[in-house]
Image (cartoon, rainbow, N blue to C red):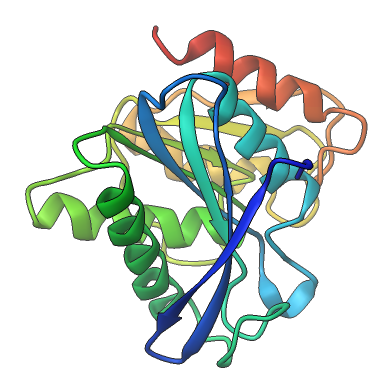
Length: 207
């Protein structure tokens, strides 16, 4: 993401996982994990939306980690339809919590990554240690079986998203009474609209 990005690898159930860490200028006040879009359609941890989410978390003082899912970049293994990816994200969380103990956790994801992070949140909640907040951009509602998410989740979606229609996200969010921030004119990849993602996350984090 920048010259200060630290790259490392973890050994997961399917092999080595390529990871990246970005740190704030001061001591971290939290841990954030960012999950990238679908690996079978070109998604990587260097996706522009995923990097924008990482920058937003760093700006609010979080030590922020990303990983390439199985079969992407230097990560070994094969795509596992969300299950293995959730396992791997839990492994990354364990690594981050060992390195930065006692800090609150935030989960961020884009597209397929929102499915992974929502599933991880369910797992963490079942274990009695849920993440403090989720940021879901281009939520995968209607594409995958998205579980319910906490009331303080930040949902951001593009008005003109033709990969995951806004109507599908609203249908998912409505029964949960979840607000959705709609970026006018934005497509699925938020072309020329990325700054709105970072700005909204930073400005709304403590609301």
